[in-house]
Amino acid sequence: MERLEYEFDGGAPVAPRNRPTLTGVLGSGNLEVLVEPADLGGRVRVEVQTAAVGFGAIWQAVLADVFARWQVGDIRVSINDAGATPAVVALRLDQALSDHTGGGA
Amino acid sequence: MTSWLEATARERIAGLLDPGSFTEFVPPEARITSPHLAQLNQPAAFDDGVAVGRGTLEGAPMLIAAQEGAFMGGAVGEVHGAKITGLLERALDERAPVLLLLESGGVRLHEANAGLIAVSEIMRAILALRGAGVPVIVLNGGRVGVFGGMGIATCLCDRLIMSEDARLGLSGPEVIETTMGVEEFDAADRALVWRVTGGKNRAIFGEAVLVPDDIAAFRAAIRLDPVPLDVEAEHALLGARLDRFGAAEDALDIWADLGIETPARLPLLDTDDFLSAIEGKLA
Image (cartoon, one colour):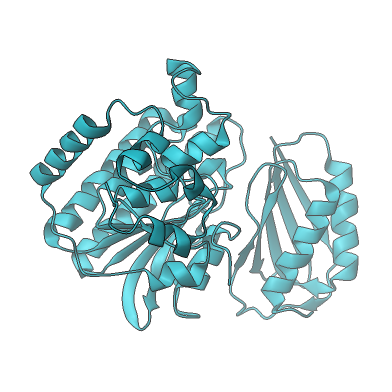
């Protein structure tokens, strides 16, 4: 298992009263994403626990792409991963951010 | 129509209870995760594979737990089990009915004794509720089915609602094949596995109320009046069943013995046609 941490500049802060949301399931080849409001000065913090070791550069690329599309800030994103492929990760994050923001951002 | 089989544990809760009424206890953001999986260097789910909380069903307050079959086959670890036991103990304090949305292979082997103890605590808490006349209803419609210790726990509850896609058993098919040989039970024969452990056979034995794979159908089948517990009568019933059907090689033999016409067609029937075909022919 590997623990990875990333930060991104972020965009419009999400409402601090948004309830935490859990999206997806930690099943084989899948991941769960917990999104919570956090006072991070507008930034986005991502913490990943993954069963697949050695893919830090790919996580960086996928997450940078997601948060370039989702201009949101002041959120903490926690991911438990059981070997999801990059495409599944990107789609699940889109779903999680949509769930958390009520569909738009 | 919304499939129970395809839904996650949280989607089942949302589809079953009155909209927006669910309040979760020990939610994912509390991060009460399995200490055992961390020691084994495995990722641990934020909710340890079960969501527990309170909500209302057509206005009536109840407590609810839902196991997530996609996380480690819904297996019961220490935290997972403690969440369910805590919910059942709260139900005793509050005299509130409990809905258990189960999907589980049984004890989580990674957690060994802690998982076994957790399952026994769940059973004890269910029996305390039965003794107090507080109803506990199992809803079983997931891909994994309900096996092992959770299969026993299910049989301790007031009522069981199942779809034909779901299964209920003690040892799972692969376990029986591995320990007793393929001649005893061929786990690769899916039709055989479902004939023996599936919702239709459980309905024929009067153990389950059979419903289509639809969350609304599960909701409509919920009855909350408690079923009186008579352990000795239950033992006598099981003894008589063993005497009558103990030599059967396959559920088909039992269905034929019950006088059901062309029993081989039963697995192909939809729920309504199946229920008409077995009317008055229950074991």
